[in-house]
Image (cartoon, rainbow, N blue to C red; front, side, top):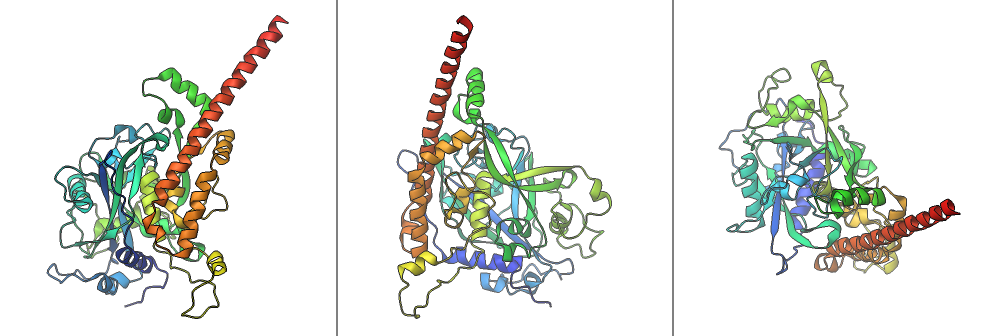
Amino acid sequence: MAEEKPDSAVRLLSCALHRIRTTPPRIIASPATQPRRAAVAIIIRVVPPPNTVPVPVDTPLPTLDQFFELDWVKDPLACPEFLLLRRDGAGPSDAVPGRASAFQNFTGDGTSRGSGKAGAHVAFPGGRTEEGDEGGLYTAMRQTWEEIGLDLAERDFVCIGQLDDREITTSLGKRLLMILSPFVFLQLTPNPLPTDPTEGTNIHWVPLETLASAVLPGHLGAKMNAKSRWSSVTVDAASRLTPRRAAILKILVRVLIGSMQFPAILLDLPESDEISGSSTGSLAALTNSGLYPALTQDKLEKGFTTTKPVLGKDRNKPRHQLKLWGLSLGMTLDLMATMIPPTSLPSSTGPNEQPISQDLQNASLPSLHLPFHPIGGEGMRIDAVAPSLACVFPRFSYPDVNFWIWVFGKRYREVVRGWEASVRDGGSNVRRVNWSGTALNTFYAAVRKALLVVLVLRAIGVLVGLVFAGWWVFA
């Protein structure tokens, strides 16, 4: 049996899951004024190579360490994947209380208004905590079962742990809506499991390599076979800042403020290969084993760019593009960040000596490779301390709006620098202080001030223009 490569996707996944299991998440307590909570399930599996011998159903389940030592997992052809959902016709404006669509397509500030040119969305299964749920983990498992018919309580799955809680707020962060808890699950068996998605819900198993190539540092991402592309989502600012039925006000705000752009990862998928309901497709032309037909088909035929060309009829299949953005992209980036090995301090001190402040200042923080920075974030390492925040802060289409956000963003920059210093020091403040919530609040406070200034300046400009035009006409 061939050994896996040191920087293979399976090895990076092993590093991530072990770090998630051993690192306690940051838990945000719900305030008395807003007790709502929600949870999602990040479901991961490893697709065995086509020639894998089927594993008997009664085989004892491995531990996490034993799982990554299995031959079919260590095989160079094994492909880690994670599950995403696409809901037909369920954009952010179609949020249904209690379902995942009620928050999954939010861009990070929690609003459920229209998404402009966002296109089709993908998200993780999950939803709001209901009365009777025993906790966030139970909510994630229950919502996954109700939405796609996958029972995470079965012996095939194990809950690895939880990522940090995150706050979901209304437009521009003025009011807290709920606290979201992401839970990570791993399938321990190679056998395909049936699913039964609700009507209009399509399942996509995304190869881990497609995202690793886009976000991991060059020495790791460049070794991935599959590639993905960065894109953006344009959201009409008027849909976030004005009442639903105020048509004239929407037009006015659209002209004065413009639109917002959010980063996204582009997934290019053939329309005819969607997994809807319990259908799994067939891969008889590619393998005679019959094992994992739908899983391997996702990797080879679902439009993810690989080193092999697309042949035959797949070349002419109609395609549509899905965008991973907002909260779903943020949670994905938090997961990918755990795959980066920690770096040691560049210090000449002995093993029993404490590093000096200069060593901590010079220490390089392991971070994802992100082709964007939030407004005012140039020079700061928000990609290292909170990659999920870097993708939910919007940029506006009008440069003067971005300028005023930078002017009023002093407090936001101080928070991020304090967060970075806490990460470098390795102190308890990293988990004790709600850095992400503070960063979000200060950023959106700067956005609110900037928008107010822009609207006032626009109004003054219009009045001056009218006065000058009147003077010119009557003079």
